[in-house]
Length: 233
Image 1 (cartoon, rainbow, N blue to C red):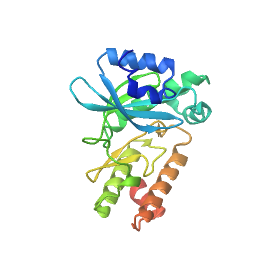
Image 2: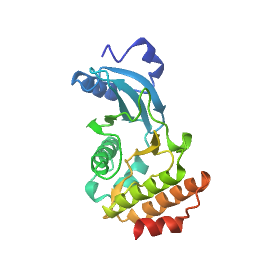
Image 3: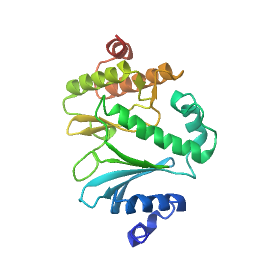
Image 4: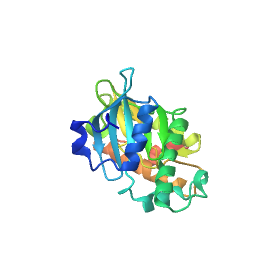
């Protein structure tokens, strides 16, 4: 594991548990990446890093933290998803299923809207395309699109495509959409589920409320009711 334990990474020693380090080394030896580059976000639930492939391409590595993840909250979300209906309430099994769920959702949603292309998944780790050029594209919270009317129409159109295919993002906000040269890219699909989930309607209502709130924040006059009319018609 010499590559991973580079001197400059010692400051992140509390980020990687031994199990995760072994999996990172496995993914590295399989040729998925050569070197970890820098942290994008270090959180209680997940850590996100950039990494370089042997071709010189930069990708994203998302790691769900095994020790500090709120697996009880994860279980509350995933237990009603018909795709994981028989999941047992055990910490690692829940975290691994949560990670796999996000990977599968990325595969499904990329048929509908712009998302990072998923590369591979291993237990609590997802490798995916990095959206951006020299560095990851900013979230909407940090980068308001220049053409706000065009942006709002594209976002509403994307939400309608998702709804019409029987899916919901489930955690949509300005934190989970990237602005890449004024083009929208959706991220963070771990809470996304299908129309067969009994909480489907509740999640849609929450997504719409968050989008309407963001529209108001940036000066757009689209209400929750107007969003519903355009998405659910």
